[in-house]
Image (cartoon, rainbow, N blue to C red; front, side, top):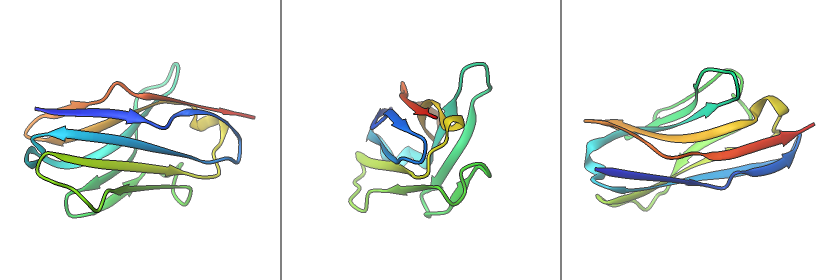
Length: 118
């Protein structure tokens, strides 16, 4: 079992920055990759960025060059932290950002709200 807890969301003006964190705990050996999804009102959930255990990263076209996903250098078999540095934020980046971990099972956090005002 893996528990994911997001933090770092908030209200920011367009052009600003936020850094999201996802604290993961539990059986980390069952996780092969983690990512951030975004759920905007009236829209389908979309993958924003992901990172594998081999440090391969992937980004949605809409955030390339503005967002950076990373993981804590210090990780154990039972804990790890993932980050999403978001720069040059736009109003269309608004939504609930959810942490996702996949491997033997799928794990989801509850999400953190990001609101970008114009």
